[in-house]
Amino acid sequence: MNRLNKPVFTKGTIREMEDMSFFIYAKIFDDLLIVAQKQTNCFVLKTSDGLIVIDAIWPVKEAFEAIIDSIEDVGWNPAAIKKLVLTHGHVDHTGCGKWFVERYHADTYLSKIDDIFWNEYPTKPDRPETWKDYKINVYIQDGDTITLGDKTIYVYGTPGHTPGGLSYMFPVKEKGETHMAALWGGTTPPWTKNEVKQYLKSLDYFISEAICRKVDVALSNHTAIDNGLERIMYSKKRLDYMPNIYIIGQDGFQNYCQVFRTLSYEMLEKL
Ligand SMILES: [Zn+2]
Image (cartoon, rainbow, N blue to C red; front, side):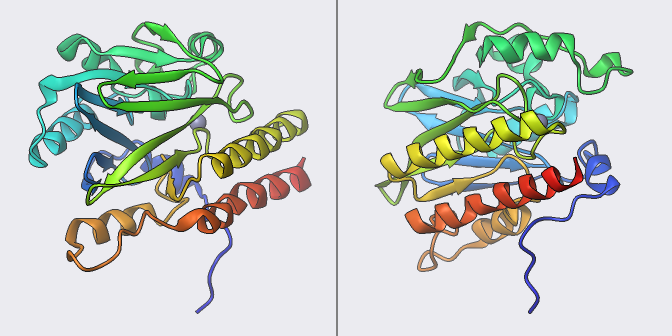
């Protein structure tokens, strides 16, 4: 079998980011839910004091409803949503956040740099319906932590994909046992040489921190990167004696991160 060392991105990939005809979700840990459309996904982390939503897909009501329905389907209560934590200021992650604010009064988290970036450089400048449409309550940066109940999210400043992009690590539980998950916030390398260099520097930093925190779970907010849809489908039907496919081990996490280097080197060759 001929395995690829990187995902294939086409114009169709970009188009599919706005295709809301398909959603899928799975409870991938005792305390972590993933909700995806074809290309983009978000996470819901359950804590002893409510829910934290991480990223918010696309700014359409269907995405919001899919997230809420998924929370209900796994037996959690959407009314317990307390926080919305964003990785970066692109529309496919800031997404449907305004409804979390309106309906659940969720506190919103992002870096100040990306809040300004989101406002000044919308991903789709010609489409006002995708522009910044809600306020950030808490500015976070490298070294910060976000705590709710029994859970703490560790915040890493990983600029490159966007100027103030953030990545996260947080503990998750599988059958009561704790694992450490990592989410690289800005998936693809940027479009200028200096920005790609910054992206690679951030990646080195994130990987070294992941080693310190013994990260053994790889999460992605874009399904193309990590066989995302297949992993969700597997998780949905996983038999109790089959392994959790998100737990890939500490070496596995290092191998996984290689894709971000591969994409960066390919980008540098083009520039
Ligand atoms: Zn992005």
